[in-house]
Amino acid sequence: MKTPDNWTEKNNALYRKIEFKNFSEAFAFMVRVAIEAERMNHHPVWTNVYNKLEIWLSTHDAGDVITEKDVELAEKINSLVLV
Amino acid sequence: MKTPDNWTEKNNALYRKIEFKNFSEAFAFMVRVAIEAERMNHHPVWTNVYNKLEIWLSTHDAGDVITEKDVELAEKINSLVLV
Amino acid sequence: MKTPDNWTEKNNALYRKIEFKNFSEAFAFMVRVAIEAERMNHHPVWTNVYNKLEIWLSTHDAGDVITEKDVELAEKINSLVLV
Amino acid sequence: MKTPDNWTEKNNALYRKIEFKNFSEAFAFMVRVAIEAERMNHHPVWTNVYNKLEIWLSTHDAGDVITEKDVELAEKINSLVLV
Image (spheres, rainbow over the protein chains, first blue to last red):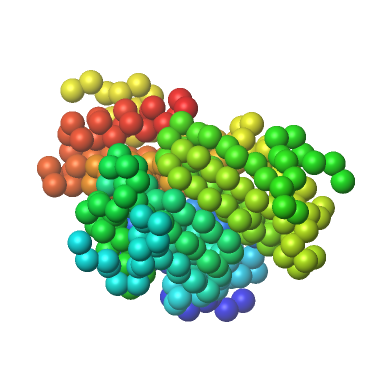
């Protein structure tokens, strides 16, 4: 399994930190991730403060390890950053 | 009062139509406008279908005509489109 | 096909109007509908102003008539109102 | 300064954990808090996973301690939980 660009492995989770211009831009991005997470029925652990967003992806049902579902969501999130 | 770029006057309201790539992008934009509208306590009439968003701005308290508040929100919305 | 509770047929679309306490409550509801619409890949025509939300559901691919997909989304929206 | 109901002091921050029925309900709540945070220009540290939301409030400009602004936002968040 290849770690997606801009993500690192950290304590059995894929991790990425993203900075935005401000809170409004960060939260609008979170809405897009929320829609995608719900569509995949696969939800991140994420922490936001103002313009910063940290995301951890792992698969609870597989014992909190990284699976293909995490890679898929990570790549989807990457595609939303690029937009 | 100058009509902001990309807006037209239509039945005593400022009007702008914006197209996005898809629903997710359109709705994330709506979140940013919603935050701004609530901050100004000045709310649009807006219609969305998939990637299309139509916005009408007028001031109810002034008798449903265009006021400086509408111009201000229109310009704020313009700045969010450019981001 | 049975029209879901609180919806009416109007110009070949299912139609429902919902009033909330304020804009914030209305928009939070819209987020939930947005998530559901994207999950079903079936999007409403909807108009919001302050605490009011009007929704029209029809199926573009079927020639803009009401189909089972519209009934399903209408019932899902009903379930979110009750929450 | 009185600690608002359901909040505790933890490392110089007000802290509250809220559980919802599911992700959609949790995220819709976050939208309401986001709108309020942006209106007050006072932003939480918050972590979400599925139906759980943890919020920490402190005032960066005052040296990361609890101030009246945090109490005000905590009480506003309480009022949104009750709705």
